Length: 72
Image (cartoon, rainbow, N blue to C red; front, side):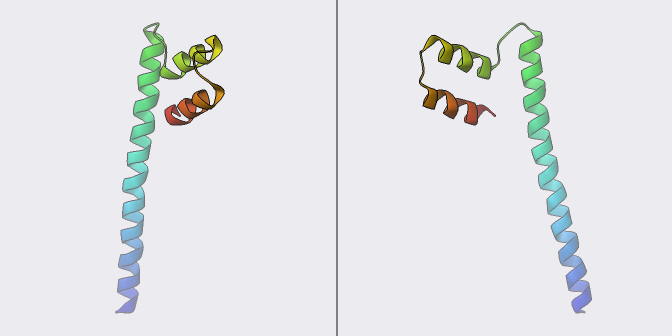
């Protein structure tokens, strides 16, 4: 009986691992496609805009690093 519970636990862990992996993959895929869309339309990605603002001196290094961390 304990063997069946152990197998059930393993299947449960694998199931949720697959579900979480698919969600993470979907989010990353969506973000990549979204960035490619911006670039193909001649637009700038949010990271490009942050780089420009940092280069112009509009934001500090700390603000740029935080933006970069938030965007990636």
